[in-house]
Structures are given as C-alpha cells and as structure tokens.
Length: 536
Image 1 (cartoon, one colour):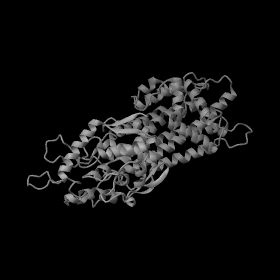
Image 2: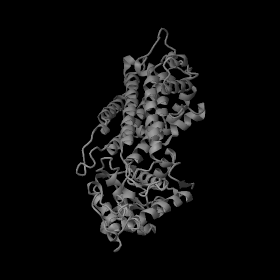
Image 3: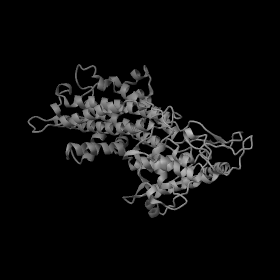
Image 4: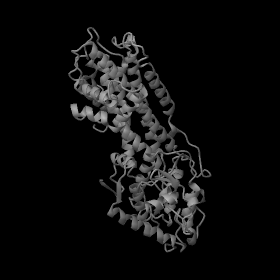
C-alpha cells in the first residue's frame, strides 16, 4: 500500500479519489509538522495571555480568546478556552438529513488534514495524525448531508467529524461523541475510536475552529465529481463514436481543418478522439448522397467540447481548493505584525459553489446530448434503417423503448438539479455572515448530475452496441473502427454476452465500468491514450 505524505500543497484529484474509495496509509510530512508546531506555539502563547497589545492588554485573537461570529467582541477567560473549542463543535453539530456516503466523508477528512498541514491554522499536528489514523483504520464518522450554507465553510458537516475526534477533559462522554462506522458497524464515535485504538483528543486553543472552519465537505464532493466527470467525457465520446457508426454518420464534421476555424480546445480534442475511435470503419460515410447529420452527431465536438472546457474550469478550481487553507483566523508567522492572527474570508465557499454549478451545467448537457443520440438509435425513421426500438422483425419484445425512457427521465432530473445554487444567499449569524455561498448544495447536486449522466451514457452504450450488433448480423463484411471495435468487445465482456441480464442490470454494469475506468482502459489499449480534459 503506497504511503501518501500530506504537505498542504501537492495533493491531486487522483489521490483524493484513491483515499476516498479505498484504505490508505496517510502521514503528515515532516516539514509540515514543523510549520504546524510553530503556528500552534504562537496560538498557545496568545491563549495563555503572554502576548500583549499596545495598551498592555492581552492580545485579542478571534476564536482563541474571543467568542465566534457576531460574538467576536466577547472576551473568553484563559481557563475556558479549551471548553470554548469543545462547545463550538458540539453546538455546530446541527446537520440533518441523509448521511454522506463514506467516500465523501473520507475525502473530507483527507482534505481537512491537508489544509491543516499548511501550518497556518494554529493547531497541533495531533489533529492531522488523528485524521490519518482514522483513514488508515477505517473509522468513518457519520456526517449528515444537509445543514451547511458553504460559509463560514462547512461548519455543520465538519463539526460532526469533530464530535468523533474530540472529547472533554472530564472523560469520554459517549453521548456527545456522535456516530461513526467501523468494521461494518454503526457505533458511537467514542466506541469506534476505542475499537480502532485511536485516542480522542481534548481540544486545545483554536482547535475547534481549526477542524470546523473550512470548505472541505463541499470540496470533497466537487473533487470526486470532477474526477468522475473527466472519465465520463471520454466514455461519452466512445459512446458517440459507436452511435456514429451505428447510424452510418458522416465524418467530414470531424475534420481538423474545420475545428481550427473555431479553435476551442475542448472541441479540437473531442473531434480528434472521435476520428481515432472510428478510424478504419466502413459504416461511417457509407450512405450515398448523405452530406451531413443531425446536430446530435454533427455538433458533438462543439457540445462535448464546451462540456470539456467547463469541466476543466471546475477541475482547476478543485485542484486549487484541495491544497488551500480555508479557516479563520490564519496564523501568518512570516508577516511583520505583532498580531500574527489574520481574519479573512478564505472559508467562503463561492469558488467551490460556482465551480460545482458550472460542472453540473456542463455534465447535464453531456447527458442531454447522449440521450438525443440514443433516441435516434431507437427511432426507426431516424436511424438509417435500424429496426424500430432495436427490436428485430417478429421479435416478441419491446427492445430499447424503456431504456430510452429511463434516459429521458434522468436527463429531465438533471435539468432541475442544474439550477445554480450559488446564486442564492440567506444571511446567517445575526447578519454577520450576510452573504453565504450555498456551495454544499451546489456540490451535492453536482455529484447527482454526474451519477445520472453516467447512467445516461451507459444506456447509449447499451443501445449503440445493439445497433452495431444488428449491423454485423446484416452484413458479415461490416468493419468497425479500431476504437469502437474495442469498445464493443468491452461492452459484450462487461455484459457477459449480448445483453445477458435484464436491461437494468446491464445498464448499471456499464455505468460501473465507466466509473471504474474499465471501458476507457479497454479502448485505450487498442488506440493509445485519448486526449483527456486537462490535455490542452
């Protein structure tokens, strides 16, 4: 098992997905540990009253010796500072609704640990060490998915994480430890940590803020959604290539000289991938007199190209965010100022919310286009004489009628989910937090859109395979493109035959193969690496 070292600045999306979806050994980088120790020492000095302002009074540091939010002017006595952190976690653990999937919580834990590793949060390395051990041992806190406005970060979700990590000085108090999953059992947080052999921490100065004041729930969902969407684009292009052949489409729309006249990077990459997939096919360009196709084929580079460019934007935002410090205040030891604690707004979820909204807009269109192509596959007078609903003559069945309807339902659902959550804002905390991002809602919906779109593309693969199998049965001389032939073989292998199960099981199997990358691997083994979203 590869060991991942957290330094606060070099985490990538593939590592996030890997840790989120499988057991992992994660450790704090040694230099990051030094930075954390230095900033924690400064915070502890402030908490103990050793730092003074120009009037000789104890230096006020937000969230260390003051209250939170609109109570920032309320001074906290040194003896109550640890209790302040604990009360923050317990009072903010107010999430509701269904729990996040385990992969989201694990990604959230990893991202919070990486943010703290930057050394600007004023907390002990023990917080990161504890999160790393929880990831390694498989302790997964139960975190409700609703209740965060995305500013000041994801307070409620991260507080549910903090419940499991922290205890009071008086003892374990299992009733205040939240819940966590360990070894397939739902336990109190205290019991889960005890069984895993991980000591719970008594929070020090600012450590309640350090664990809760960040955008990691939103970012975890965005990071995983982007990672999946980057794969999904390639699967959508593979499905498009198969449909292009099944419908005996015209390849001239893919000519590189056309794409260079309107040189969007995504469109150029998409057209190049499609040319490679169908290269060698004798179904493409095989209808005499046909000079162009409907938009759902002919405009695929323009539509999926725009999708690619949108996913790339969201991915760039996610790649910045997973290596960002997002709590408040931040301890800047290198700045020439007596008060090293700087209150800012890095916790605000707007960059994540807008990226999530843009991602779901792009991926919803990917699914929309996929459904239009599979509609043509299943419509007799639009499919270059494929059998209506892909039902062969005298066959006693409904063919692809309901799979197409399922895709239509998913596409319609995506249209509702694509409404941009980040345009909304409801003030909170006595109007101190008077503009919030709603980033968590945006990211949660982005995951749903990606999941729905993956199933739509799987249905197109299912129908395109049916169309190509019919073409092969009608003409033994049919020759598929190098890439589409590999895709068709992979589809048959995934299905265990030519549609061996019920449509639901077949389509879910194909969706799983898209998510796992198996379909893409099979095609790339035949044609070489296809151009990815970030390959521009």
